[in-house]
Length: 158
Image (cartoon, rainbow, N blue to C red; front, side, top):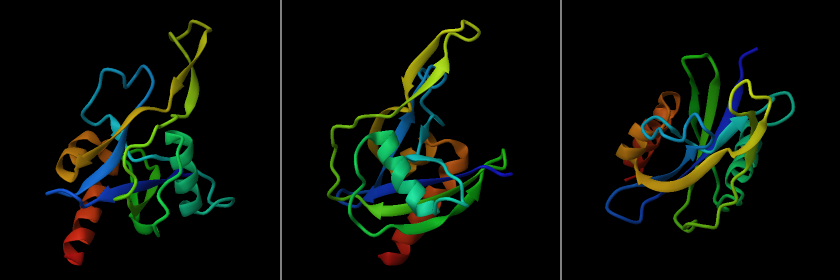
């Protein structure tokens, strides 16, 4: 069965360029990486149990430790990673979201490898607003089509 995930991408239009909120992935593998090491707050879900939108909102809360803004989310689309995993991304206006005090969720991993020691790491270690063109470079490759889709949506609305 193909893994499915869903994410919530916040955007804001306040400055000269549209910006999105993305998160740098946590854990030892991503610690020294920057380009292609950021993600839309997202996570896996079981489509038989949960809708993509419910999963996106849940994962936003779990990863960032804060509630998403109240706005009405719109589905941007669903894309496949090269691995076959599929991601559905929703967008919501985050103009009033600001920079809250995040409380990042954690996961456990055997670290160092084969040591028998399990260590907790944050799912993400920081979240930042960045212009679309920078976010496109920073996001993992499989999530970049969401930036393109948002850009088209914003262009059509203006």
